[in-house]
Length: 480
Image 1 (tube, one colour):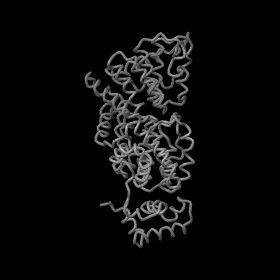
Image 2 (spheres, helix red, strand yellow):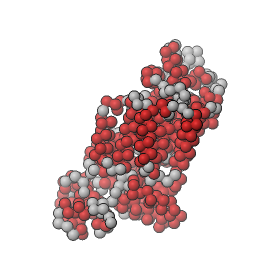
Image 3 (cartoon, helix red, strand yellow):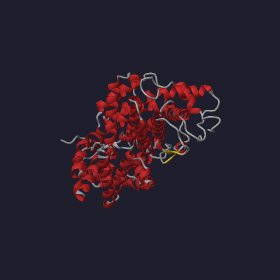
Image 4 (cartoon, helix red, strand yellow):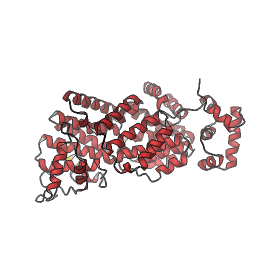
């Protein structure tokens, strides 16, 4: 992007597409056209200009948004670093407030798309600072809601969503002008308290706003699959997620939404006892910098179900080492899985330390219990008991969390029956309720078939049954 050639070179078509797209980023003018976004997503933004003007900022804004919305994210966060240093432009700028607000909002949307909501939240706050009109403010609030929701900063996200929705209603904008970023951020917030009625409303809003946009349609599908998982409608959820992930529409979806859906699909497979398939589903999944979607965390949850506790620890050490570079929304479930693994491995002190970090993060970020999604209820209960035993000040937080746990944690099966079993036997008993055969269970647990058979006989004796069928019936019996 030389000073003489301009940010888009000689192409009048590209300049016109940027101007048209820029005008439609705020409500009141309709959504950007797909053909303009496709053109802009392929364009090279170029080098930093000698001086930033409103026109140059407009073009870069449109290009960043186009890349975010057309999954053209190959340059990652380095594209932002080309023009900004610690949130500030690296060259002098003669920008109006509206142009600066729009540019920062575009950067925030791009950062969220590449999986860096921590950085995106900073730019969204700057966009809000320079917004001068209701439309500019709504745009800034929308990208802020997505960034905060992705990073598990739920109290801030809730305030932002409320203000944006109130502003939208007060201005009387058409439903077609609603922001995809806002609705996705609202969805991330809503799932934290398992409010499935509102999740359905969000899916309906997305569907109504842009019924013919394949990118929006994919997001609708992901939200509906989330509802199916939490409501344990697994057969329908797997069918819907397969259709989305394997269908031709996959090529026209937002990367962050597609990655979220892949994790949901693996969770549902694990919930049905298809552990090998769940791990295979995630075997080639790429975790991008920022870890807004963290596939090591996803794999760790499945490994817990097959007794691979040591692998859980080893495979997540690198994530823990990232410290504040790791997204908070995925860090808390990752630490939860490590806590369960430590507890099963007999390292109670490390289990308590890890779980205490989880509870304090949840306390700080707004009370979400999504870190316990698909974690066996009995493990979660035991860890919470240990945490408050060592940290009485956390009793109020833990009490609130326990109220929501039954709706989101993996359901315990016959916890009264499980109580008589050792930790190893409980894990094996869980596998007995799956579709895995004895040889498959032996491979999953890295032990011999004879060892599994011996442990199964011990389980039968403690449960007072003589067959797998009777054991499964007892273990799956709801507690009275």
